[in-house]
Image 1: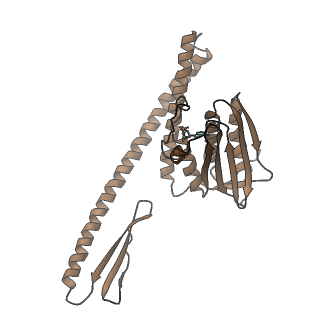
Image 2: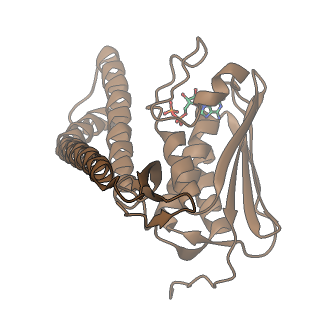
Image 3: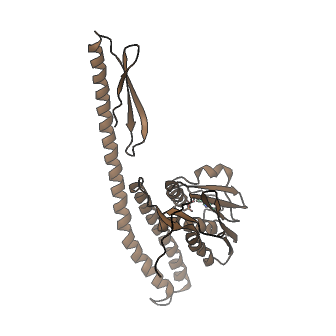
Length: 303
Ligand code: ADP
């Protein structure tokens, strides 16, 4: 906490402004103390200061407790998510071996059971990965990695994910010329992969997935457009919230964690950009990522 300076004003009062900062250094509240500095009122003034100090130390104590609880929660989440990873990987490995027939031929019923078990384990693995990512975001809140990376390459790599779908066709327009931005390559790839995966996932009847990259002023702007289920105007506000799944009769059979878009926007915002969405129900959605461009050169790998 930062102690503000006492400033006597013309009417003989000392005014102290004390900003109360949260663990991330943001000012949440301000305590203003007005002290009568007139001679003879010293006793009252001291009492006033003591009361304020008591209040402050109780605030300190509460803040310490909250920070300890928050750390406990993060440690618990880290531990459980890491401990879940290995057994999930083993289950996934065996199920994949069963599916491929390596462990013997499967009856039709068993093959179906293995198929849906794989889907459920994949969803759990995605949830664990996103929880780990969320914990990491909290740890690196103040210092995101900012290296020059070529966004067109990253978007092209994410776009390949549409190839896995027989019902969709990809319309990829990366513009011309380089589009370098500052960020972490792996994280940005996750952002665009997530948006492309969603475009495929939420257009179950297929259609075109349009991905367009362009430079607008100093920004690099990427649109990911689908012709899928769309989102009702009343649900738009929940899109980017933690665990903000929108379950309708059309989406209830589609698996998800509700963390993907939250993570996408958090990551992009930390780099000084933003992710927004527009949508028309039953016609499709467009997710737009804006990132500040950079003039710093992208290091090329020696290959
Ligand atoms: P999920 O893991 O549920 O896909 P997301 O955070 O990625 O979580 O998305 C949150 C919700 O936003 C989803 O449950 C879905 O209802 C909606 N959504 C996301 N992308 C699209 C899209 N391209 N079209 C329609 N709805 C979408």
